[in-house]
Length: 346
Image (cartoon, rainbow, N blue to C red; front, side, top):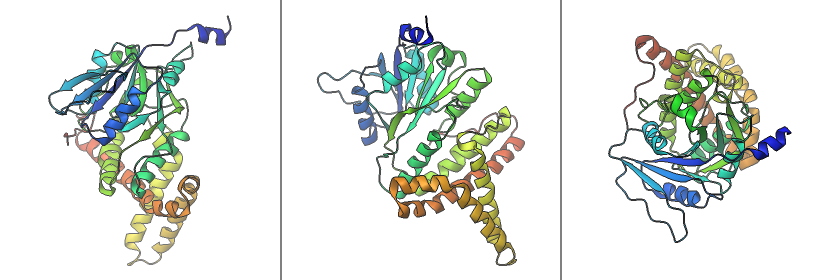
């Protein structure tokens, strides 16, 4: 029997969709409509209400029903996903955020990817290039995520739970998501690191796409980049001693962080030492050259004016990454007894 025949003969695994829900808001209702439109349908849809007191609206006649799991207090998406996984009946756990709209064929794509002898232990998709909310911060943020995953290695080095699936037996064997991340943070990345350390395969399935519905604010974006991503991710890297050239840790990102650091420091000191202006200009040139492919992508998607307006946001992003790196090292040294950054729920 050929490999293709073997793949066709392998049954599609049953799939449980799990969504942690903080609020029954406009974004979640769009997400829910997209879940009820999935074709083929998953085995079940589990909505884990993470301290959310509201009721999930009933569907129209003929809509698929959902199972609701209600947690009395909000303890973060990691715990909510774990609670959903504990009650799931599917062979594959398909995690989705409550602020994404999933495409109708998502179950077909996930099921097909887990067929055959070469199937991975986990996979994840990406945001598409049509983010829902207007405004430069929201459009920039979601297109940056789309670009990063679009150019990532298909044999992935980590995991993403915004649109990610994992075999239930692997998930339970590894203990699920780390629940000490009480805010949306890097709990999915941390799980991905444990999967790779255990010799498990993770695939980036670029054709599996969701539309992000979230509206990003400027200061919310800075807080997320610094305290929910850069600091805990640095601590995770130091814990695992795992520094890969992929996604947000690619060589171009590391060069950009260094260039933005030099640009900031020389820019501050230049009034007292004008010769440092040369360093500032050089660092800015390096930053623009390294990020030229990304800026061309922004031009293609939203035009030149939009691309120009993203440059300061991109610089702030790399600055947050650099600051987070040093803060993460400081916390790692001063609090070596803590494996993860302890976060308080918002």
